[in-house]
Image (cartoon, rainbow, N blue to C red; front, side, top):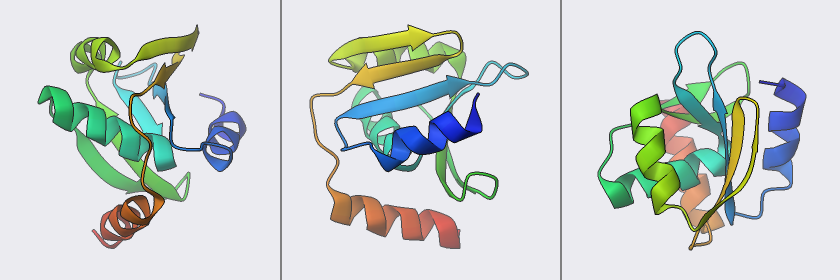
Length: 111
């Protein structure tokens, strides 16, 4: 994962897409910031498990799902907008409510 690209993707994320990145060591998929909130919402929609933490490295919330769950999540997304190496951008049928996102991000950061 290119850290700078992931940060930029979240700076410009208007809440209509989820950017996720596959960890080469574990095979798990991670999303950060607004994308993390969107991934959490997709997980809740399909009933898959996820882990949410505050990433000290990225300085934003992070949601992690297994590779097996990611396949179900891709099916639940409106579309796979792009796939490059170990990253994917999913279009979603909802728009992240920024007030809800901020409240959730604060809860995740506090732990």
